[in-house]
Image (tube, rainbow, N blue to C red; front, side, top):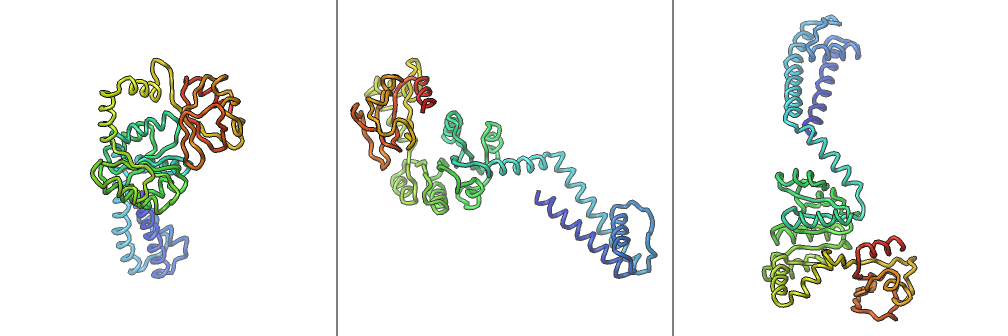
Length: 328
């Protein structure tokens, strides 16, 4: 697209040069000079529409060499772009940027490796809007085929983050392979939007988590540490881990652990758990309540009052959870 824009500007410059030349050398009017320039550089050959002096003919020879050569060059480049699909890809990138610019309360996923791919899939399944920033050309096409919005570029670059709509984003997830790159991404994102929620992947190396927190990450997770802990717990407490898997991922029991935010206008606000009907009417168990200021209450009693802006962590059937969401 940049090449087409430059070509258009140069074409207009040649038109202006030819028009001014005929007007100055042979005293032609503006329209006649413009008409003479167009038929000359396009090799139409309708003949001279104004009497040309020797200087005018020399100028015409110069205009033919410059103008016709330029037109042939542009034609070959445009034809090559169409044949190789570059023009279509450029238009596709423009459409992608326009779609990204319309996002609100979305997540920015930096990196599309094995971890980033799973994160994008889960976000899509839960209807969370997202855009991926990836610099590897081989992965960009795969991301688009997967149905995700994608921007090509360095995630640590301020301009790339702004194109991804960081000012309107709900959160950023940095899952690139290098701790150093993750630190740069975190610093850039925090500098643009200080209140943004940032989750960062750590390699697990000593000091990496501390540096990422200093850079501004809200949450730092190490897939290697989590994986090792999960495998060890499966050996030590297999039944507990199996139950957690069933509750988090669903399974033969049909149970799910879900969280639900209590809005200020919610009918649950100001009522106790016993009076809310969550257990009685919807057969759901409130496992924990996270208060507005971050306090976590595990296994709350029936007399616990539900406050506005609380987050309820519930265990129960997926259909029952959806029914409660529809009711609220």
